[in-house]
Length: 286
Image (cartoon, rainbow, N blue to C red; front, side, top):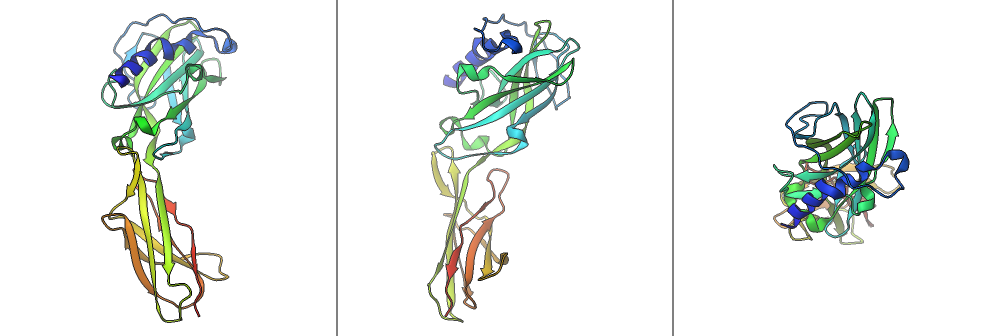
């Protein structure tokens, strides 16, 4: 019910308060917007544009989230990033605003990412030509309102666009161009230190990632992780072997001591979790 109430506020007076203000007067007091009539429609300028509310010749040409880069989120810190909507209309675009949502129904989403304050719904708009403008707002992802189901999938984008004739169009099913990912951590520990040449070195570590359901970090299991080594004085690492994380995300393997150098683990990442490289751990071979 909390999310439903939030969406009702966002898609009603809150989200559209910015749209009643001409871009050139964004610092003035917002005027309460008029409700728009709901009508069906679709387009494919940026994929399925979903349900349209109100009739106009507005077309959304592009939706860019976080500059096209995936957003990595941990368990506690909120993450602010940009949502840019490029729209066109024969009469020109006055202003656009929006938010990200997940699920099948914008009125009852399973996840939602909106501007953190009412003021942030007021976008910064750049006029590209007589018909087209790009408007950008900042949205904030709060781990407290995320679940693991929201990682690695394309979120929907709600866009409300007002043209220069003050016609308002709401597009509820646009698609974002990035994915949210669960932050990852990777450690390494080579022992013993120092070690005699020819003896066994045990290289341990752990691969963990943010669990948005529990709000804690937990082991990322059964994942291939590269063990790399850099000889003392060398400029680059080389891969020694690939190790798989166990059921708790732990890593452990052995190598023979040969020369002084530094070990590290490298994880390539997945659709839900970003790549990560551990710090290096130097060994002294005697």
